[in-house]
Image 1 (cartoon, helix red, strand yellow):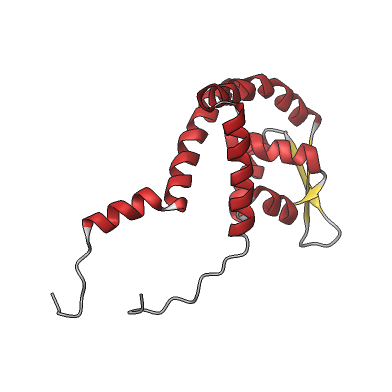
Image 2 (tube, rainbow, N blue to C red; image 1 turned 180 degrees about the vertical axis):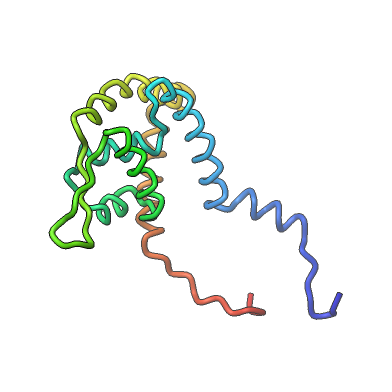
Length: 164
């Protein structure tokens, strides 16, 4: 190994794993998604689809771009989810004011699917609230909203190879 290369310290790696907000948020998100997916399974919806349907219900009709912004989802990922929902007849995707714009709205069948899924979602939510308590869940949701706001305005300096 060249003299100018540093050896990666295992303790430093462990500290990064323990303290990295991104890593730990993603782990928590994956575990929580599994719980909600398991609870929602009888509805035929996945958590991501349920969330998109709910957002389309609350905000719709809405442009695909705006829906992606609200759900903090990449457009390609959102399009994949919407395609599944459209094939199931749960959303309608139509041309917008110009050819590039797509507008999403929930169908009557989509609304029925949401109504049927709500008790399943409530079971998942109750499980989390029983584990953490309502007050901690409320604080967590506030903290997550703050993280979303902070993350939308990144201020990382440009990375340069060889610079710490």
